[in-house]
Length: 176
Image (cartoon, rainbow, N blue to C red; front, side):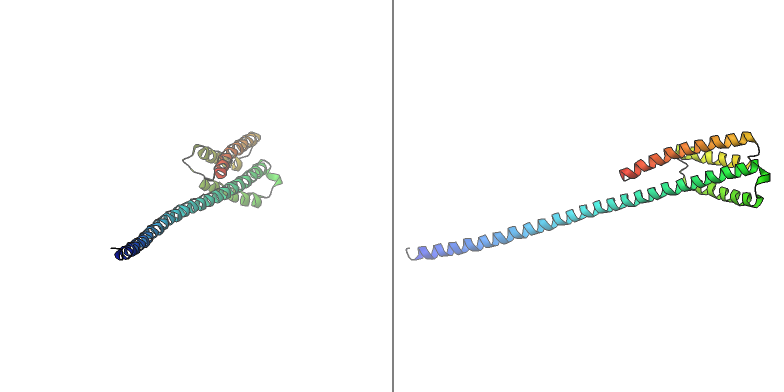
């Protein structure tokens, strides 16, 4: 037994060494497998976050462009309306062709403004109504009372637009 004891011990040492090697390989395999699974999940999560960030950025940029464009259209609309109203109030001092051209542009601007508004939002609906009233007052401005009405509507348009733009700006700042 003395001779075989070292052989048995060597055999057991070889078996244990091989088992440890196999066990190490199995543990390594599962570690790599679960690491790749975790990595894939992390990549999916990172992709979703990047996609959401991209979408929020695009929406915010488009919303800012919408704010700028609406502000510009309304500003031009009011300026033309005031000009037309004054021109119709003083027909002897203005060029009829110029008034006609500016009236056509006023009509186009009215349409563009209304197309930019959401008819389901109360403030947008209010602004649309004011734009229609302003347009009607501007092209029918043939007496001093109409001029006062035109000015009053102009102020209401500005006030309503400022509220709409403030709400939209807040949404841009939040990244909506």
